Length: 100
Ligand code: SF4
Image (cartoon, rainbow, N blue to C red):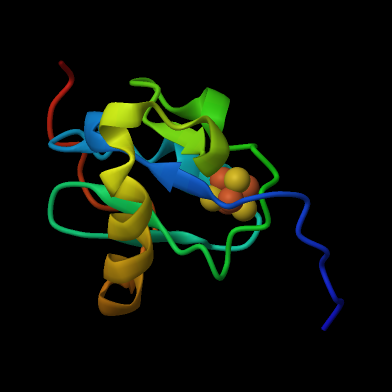
């Protein structure tokens, strides 16, 4: 197993994902860092290698590097970290919930 050097801080899914769960991000993540709840995704900070590939894939701009997260979304940093261990790895196969 190669020792992958983390380049910065992990990325975080924020409230814009809720009730959408588009999962375009899941398809590009090289390390299966996304975890899936019923109606949104989170990123496991222990898995994320901060490659930023997912950021531009999100149709609702829900993903930020945690250093860049808007003030009103800061609670999602803990939420991603705390919820990830309880959730299954996102496969990208569950349905998109809403298109607007
Ligand atoms: Fe996966 Fe890279 Fe996004 Fe982290 S930044 S969740 S490793 S695609």
